[in-house]
Image 1 (cartoon, one colour):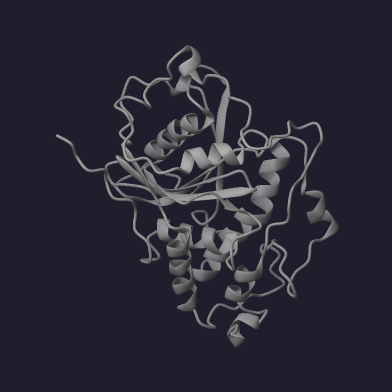
Image 2 (cartoon, rainbow, N blue to C red):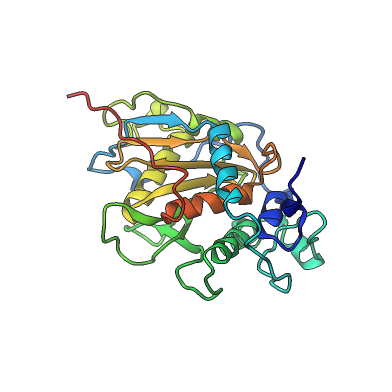
Length: 306
Protein backbone atom coordinates (compact mmCIF):
# COMPACT_ATOMS: atom_id res chain seq x y z
CA UNK A 1 0.00 0.00 0.00
CA UNK A 2 1.32 3.46 -0.96
CA UNK A 3 1.72 5.96 1.88
CA UNK A 4 -0.73 8.83 1.83
CA UNK A 5 1.96 11.48 1.44
CA UNK A 6 3.16 9.81 -1.75
CA UNK A 7 -0.22 10.50 -3.32
CA UNK A 8 -0.07 14.20 -2.52
CA UNK A 9 0.70 16.00 -5.81
CA UNK A 10 2.22 18.96 -3.95
CA UNK A 11 5.11 16.82 -2.67
CA UNK A 12 8.42 16.61 -4.49
CA UNK A 13 8.84 12.98 -3.38
CA UNK A 14 5.45 12.11 -4.89
CA UNK A 15 6.39 13.74 -8.17
CA UNK A 16 9.86 12.16 -8.43
CA UNK A 17 8.72 8.60 -7.77
CA UNK A 18 6.11 8.77 -10.56
CA UNK A 19 7.77 11.07 -13.12
CA UNK A 20 8.86 9.24 -16.25
CA UNK A 21 11.07 9.82 -19.27
CA UNK A 22 9.06 9.86 -22.50
CA UNK A 23 10.65 7.89 -25.35
CA UNK A 24 12.67 9.69 -27.99
CA UNK A 25 11.41 9.72 -31.56
CA UNK A 26 14.55 9.01 -33.57
CA UNK A 27 14.66 10.16 -37.18
CA UNK A 28 14.80 7.43 -39.81
CA UNK A 29 18.05 8.88 -41.14
CA UNK A 30 19.90 7.86 -37.96
CA UNK A 31 21.67 4.47 -38.10
CA UNK A 32 19.56 1.75 -36.43
CA UNK A 33 21.28 -0.60 -33.99
CA UNK A 34 20.01 -3.80 -32.42
CA UNK A 35 22.67 -4.73 -29.88
CA UNK A 36 26.10 -3.31 -30.71
CA UNK A 37 26.75 -0.04 -32.50
CA UNK A 38 29.13 0.25 -35.40
CA UNK A 39 32.75 0.31 -34.20
CA UNK A 40 33.95 3.83 -33.45
CA UNK A 41 36.99 5.09 -35.35
CA UNK A 42 40.30 5.24 -33.56
CA UNK A 43 40.53 8.20 -31.15
CA UNK A 44 44.22 9.13 -31.16
CA UNK A 45 43.74 11.48 -28.23
CA UNK A 46 43.08 8.44 -26.02
CA UNK A 47 46.64 7.17 -26.59
CA UNK A 48 48.45 8.33 -23.47
CA UNK A 49 52.05 8.26 -22.25
CA UNK A 50 50.85 7.80 -18.66
CA UNK A 51 49.17 4.75 -17.16
CA UNK A 52 45.45 4.73 -16.51
CA UNK A 53 45.32 3.31 -13.00
CA UNK A 54 42.02 1.41 -13.14
CA UNK A 55 42.52 -2.27 -12.30
CA UNK A 56 39.20 -3.63 -11.05
CA UNK A 57 35.49 -3.15 -11.79
CA UNK A 58 32.82 -4.40 -9.41
CA UNK A 59 29.05 -4.45 -9.77
CA UNK A 60 26.61 -2.34 -7.79
CA UNK A 61 23.58 -4.56 -7.13
CA UNK A 62 20.63 -2.57 -8.41
CA UNK A 63 18.42 -3.71 -5.55
CA UNK A 64 20.92 -2.45 -2.98
CA UNK A 65 21.10 0.92 -4.70
CA UNK A 66 17.33 1.23 -4.92
CA UNK A 67 17.00 0.36 -1.23
CA UNK A 68 19.39 3.21 -0.42
CA UNK A 69 17.42 5.57 -2.65
CA UNK A 70 14.16 4.65 -0.90
CA UNK A 71 15.72 5.19 2.52
CA UNK A 72 16.99 8.60 1.45
CA UNK A 73 13.59 9.87 0.29
CA UNK A 74 11.76 8.45 3.29
CA UNK A 75 13.72 10.88 5.43
CA UNK A 76 11.93 13.82 3.87
CA UNK A 77 8.46 12.67 4.90
CA UNK A 78 6.15 15.52 3.80
CA UNK A 79 8.56 18.43 4.10
CA UNK A 80 9.34 19.14 0.43
CA UNK A 81 6.47 21.01 -1.18
CA UNK A 82 6.37 21.89 -4.88
CA UNK A 83 5.00 25.12 -6.33
CA UNK A 84 3.37 24.00 -9.58
CA UNK A 85 3.81 27.42 -11.08
CA UNK A 86 7.41 26.18 -11.22
CA UNK A 87 7.96 25.13 -14.83
CA UNK A 88 11.40 23.65 -14.24
CA UNK A 89 10.08 20.21 -13.29
CA UNK A 90 9.53 19.18 -16.88
CA UNK A 91 9.11 15.39 -16.80
CA UNK A 92 5.52 14.16 -17.23
CA UNK A 93 3.91 12.57 -14.20
CA UNK A 94 0.49 10.83 -14.01
CA UNK A 95 -2.07 13.00 -12.30
CA UNK A 96 0.35 15.91 -11.90
CA UNK A 97 1.85 17.12 -15.19
CA UNK A 98 1.39 16.30 -18.88
CA UNK A 99 3.52 16.91 -21.94
CA UNK A 100 2.79 20.12 -23.80
CA UNK A 101 2.96 20.29 -27.60
CA UNK A 102 6.22 22.22 -27.30
CA UNK A 103 7.70 19.55 -25.02
CA UNK A 104 6.56 16.76 -27.35
CA UNK A 105 8.39 18.45 -30.20
CA UNK A 106 11.63 18.20 -28.20
CA UNK A 107 11.37 14.41 -28.35
CA UNK A 108 11.94 14.38 -32.12
CA UNK A 109 15.66 13.74 -32.58
CA UNK A 110 17.53 13.93 -35.88
CA UNK A 111 21.02 14.92 -34.67
CA UNK A 112 23.23 15.11 -31.59
CA UNK A 113 22.05 18.63 -30.75
CA UNK A 114 18.42 17.43 -30.62
CA UNK A 115 19.52 14.55 -28.39
CA UNK A 116 21.35 16.84 -25.95
CA UNK A 117 18.43 19.28 -25.90
CA UNK A 118 15.94 16.52 -25.00
CA UNK A 119 18.25 15.10 -22.32
CA UNK A 120 18.84 18.49 -20.74
CA UNK A 121 15.23 19.66 -20.95
CA UNK A 122 13.55 16.60 -19.49
CA UNK A 123 15.70 14.81 -16.94
CA UNK A 124 18.78 16.94 -16.26
CA UNK A 125 16.77 20.11 -15.72
CA UNK A 126 14.28 18.25 -13.53
CA UNK A 127 17.01 16.62 -11.43
CA UNK A 128 18.77 19.97 -10.95
CA UNK A 129 15.53 21.61 -9.78
CA UNK A 130 14.92 18.67 -7.42
CA UNK A 131 18.39 19.18 -5.90
CA UNK A 132 17.75 22.91 -5.47
CA UNK A 133 14.41 22.15 -3.81
CA UNK A 134 15.95 19.59 -1.45
CA UNK A 135 18.76 21.94 -0.51
CA UNK A 136 16.40 24.95 -0.40
CA UNK A 137 18.56 26.93 -2.80
CA UNK A 138 17.44 29.49 -5.44
CA UNK A 139 17.08 28.64 -9.13
CA UNK A 140 19.90 30.95 -10.17
CA UNK A 141 22.41 29.27 -7.86
CA UNK A 142 25.36 28.93 -10.26
CA UNK A 143 26.74 25.82 -8.62
CA UNK A 144 23.48 23.84 -8.67
CA UNK A 145 22.96 23.17 -12.34
CA UNK A 146 24.29 20.91 -15.06
CA UNK A 147 26.95 22.40 -17.32
CA UNK A 148 27.51 21.08 -20.83
CA UNK A 149 31.17 20.52 -21.67
CA UNK A 150 32.38 19.52 -25.11
CA UNK A 151 35.67 17.69 -24.74
CA UNK A 152 37.90 18.74 -27.62
CA UNK A 153 41.26 17.66 -28.94
CA UNK A 154 44.32 19.59 -27.78
CA UNK A 155 45.79 18.99 -31.22
CA UNK A 156 42.89 20.46 -33.20
CA UNK A 157 39.39 21.87 -32.79
CA UNK A 158 37.82 18.43 -33.23
CA UNK A 159 35.10 17.61 -30.71
CA UNK A 160 35.75 14.25 -29.07
CA UNK A 161 32.80 13.65 -26.74
CA UNK A 162 30.25 15.48 -24.60
CA UNK A 163 29.70 15.49 -20.85
CA UNK A 164 27.53 17.30 -18.35
CA UNK A 165 28.99 18.17 -14.97
CA UNK A 166 27.23 19.15 -11.78
CA UNK A 167 29.56 20.76 -9.33
CA UNK A 168 31.96 23.65 -8.81
CA UNK A 169 33.37 24.84 -12.14
CA UNK A 170 36.71 25.69 -10.56
CA UNK A 171 39.96 23.79 -10.26
CA UNK A 172 39.87 20.99 -7.67
CA UNK A 173 41.44 21.92 -4.35
CA UNK A 174 41.22 18.55 -2.59
CA UNK A 175 41.44 14.83 -3.25
CA UNK A 176 37.69 14.16 -3.13
CA UNK A 177 36.05 16.97 -5.09
CA UNK A 178 32.24 17.22 -4.71
CA UNK A 179 30.41 16.82 -8.00
CA UNK A 180 29.51 14.40 -10.76
CA UNK A 181 30.19 13.76 -14.45
CA UNK A 182 27.53 12.52 -16.86
CA UNK A 183 29.05 11.10 -20.03
CA UNK A 184 26.39 11.16 -22.75
CA UNK A 185 26.47 9.12 -25.95
CA UNK A 186 23.63 9.26 -28.52
CA UNK A 187 21.70 5.95 -28.68
CA UNK A 188 22.62 5.42 -32.35
CA UNK A 189 26.32 5.36 -31.38
CA UNK A 190 26.17 3.02 -28.37
CA UNK A 191 24.00 -0.09 -28.16
CA UNK A 192 22.83 -2.05 -25.14
CA UNK A 193 25.44 -4.70 -25.98
CA UNK A 194 28.20 -2.07 -25.77
CA UNK A 195 26.86 -0.84 -22.42
CA UNK A 196 26.61 -4.35 -20.99
CA UNK A 197 30.21 -5.02 -22.01
CA UNK A 198 31.24 -1.70 -20.45
CA UNK A 199 29.49 -2.41 -17.14
CA UNK A 200 30.48 -6.06 -16.80
CA UNK A 201 32.46 -7.03 -13.71
CA UNK A 202 36.21 -7.33 -14.21
CA UNK A 203 38.50 -8.76 -11.57
CA UNK A 204 41.59 -7.34 -13.19
CA UNK A 205 42.49 -5.16 -16.17
CA UNK A 206 45.69 -6.30 -17.84
CA UNK A 207 48.70 -4.02 -17.21
CA UNK A 208 48.68 -1.06 -19.64
CA UNK A 209 45.50 -2.39 -21.26
CA UNK A 210 43.89 1.06 -21.22
CA UNK A 211 46.96 3.15 -22.10
CA UNK A 212 47.15 2.84 -25.88
CA UNK A 213 44.84 1.29 -28.44
CA UNK A 214 46.65 -1.53 -30.25
CA UNK A 215 46.61 -1.44 -34.06
CA UNK A 216 44.82 -3.78 -36.42
CA UNK A 217 42.39 -6.50 -35.45
CA UNK A 218 43.04 -6.07 -31.70
CA UNK A 219 41.65 -2.51 -31.70
CA UNK A 220 39.60 -1.42 -28.70
CA UNK A 221 35.91 -2.10 -28.62
CA UNK A 222 33.47 0.76 -28.11
CA UNK A 223 33.16 -0.30 -24.46
CA UNK A 224 36.94 -0.10 -23.91
CA UNK A 225 37.10 3.32 -25.56
CA UNK A 226 34.27 4.36 -23.26
CA UNK A 227 36.32 3.34 -20.19
CA UNK A 228 39.27 5.43 -21.38
CA UNK A 229 37.01 8.42 -22.12
CA UNK A 230 35.34 8.15 -18.72
CA UNK A 231 38.63 7.76 -16.84
CA UNK A 232 40.19 10.81 -18.51
CA UNK A 233 37.10 12.96 -17.99
CA UNK A 234 36.73 12.10 -14.31
CA UNK A 235 40.47 12.24 -13.60
CA UNK A 236 40.77 15.76 -15.03
CA UNK A 237 37.70 16.99 -13.16
CA UNK A 238 38.55 14.99 -10.00
CA UNK A 239 34.91 13.87 -9.69
CA UNK A 240 34.57 10.33 -8.29
CA UNK A 241 30.84 10.01 -9.13
CA UNK A 242 29.64 9.39 -12.67
CA UNK A 243 26.75 8.40 -14.90
CA UNK A 244 26.93 7.07 -18.45
CA UNK A 245 23.77 7.39 -20.49
CA UNK A 246 22.28 7.11 -23.96
CA UNK A 247 18.95 8.43 -22.60
CA UNK A 248 17.52 4.97 -23.27
CA UNK A 249 19.84 3.31 -20.72
CA UNK A 250 21.58 4.61 -17.60
CA UNK A 251 24.66 3.33 -15.74
CA UNK A 252 25.49 4.74 -12.28
CA UNK A 253 28.98 4.41 -10.84
CA UNK A 254 31.86 5.70 -8.72
CA UNK A 255 35.65 5.70 -8.71
CA UNK A 256 37.89 4.84 -5.80
CA UNK A 257 40.18 7.33 -4.04
CA UNK A 258 43.28 6.18 -5.95
CA UNK A 259 41.39 5.58 -9.24
CA UNK A 260 42.31 1.88 -9.24
CA UNK A 261 38.78 0.63 -8.60
CA UNK A 262 35.36 1.41 -10.03
CA UNK A 263 31.89 0.16 -9.24
CA UNK A 264 28.82 0.52 -11.40
CA UNK A 265 25.35 -0.79 -12.07
CA UNK A 266 24.19 -2.81 -15.00
CA UNK A 267 22.41 -0.63 -17.62
CA UNK A 268 19.04 0.57 -16.31
CA UNK A 269 16.34 1.06 -19.00
CA UNK A 270 14.78 4.52 -19.00
CA UNK A 271 11.26 3.08 -18.92
CA UNK A 272 11.60 -0.03 -16.71
CA UNK A 273 13.03 0.67 -13.28
CA UNK A 274 10.96 -1.74 -11.11
CA UNK A 275 9.06 0.76 -9.03
CA UNK A 276 11.68 3.50 -9.06
CA UNK A 277 12.10 6.34 -11.53
CA UNK A 278 15.36 7.28 -13.24
CA UNK A 279 15.07 10.84 -11.97
CA UNK A 280 14.82 9.59 -8.37
CA UNK A 281 18.05 7.65 -8.83
CA UNK A 282 19.83 10.50 -10.62
CA UNK A 283 18.86 13.07 -7.98
CA UNK A 284 20.07 10.71 -5.25
CA UNK A 285 23.38 10.14 -7.09
CA UNK A 286 23.93 13.88 -7.50
CA UNK A 287 23.28 14.50 -3.79
CA UNK A 288 25.69 11.69 -2.86
CA UNK A 289 28.33 13.23 -5.12
CA UNK A 290 27.90 16.54 -3.31
CA UNK A 291 28.36 14.85 0.07
CA UNK A 292 24.78 15.74 0.95
CA UNK A 293 23.77 12.12 1.46
CA UNK A 294 25.53 9.38 3.43
CA UNK A 295 23.63 6.36 2.09
CA UNK A 296 26.32 5.43 -0.46
CA UNK A 297 30.11 5.55 -0.55
CA UNK A 298 32.57 5.55 -3.42
CA UNK A 299 34.24 2.40 -4.69
CA UNK A 300 37.07 0.71 -2.82
CA UNK A 301 40.52 0.69 -4.35
CA UNK A 302 41.66 -2.45 -6.13
CA UNK A 303 43.78 -4.80 -3.98
CA UNK A 304 47.49 -4.28 -4.38
CA UNK A 305 49.59 -7.13 -5.77
CA UNK A 306 53.10 -6.05 -4.89
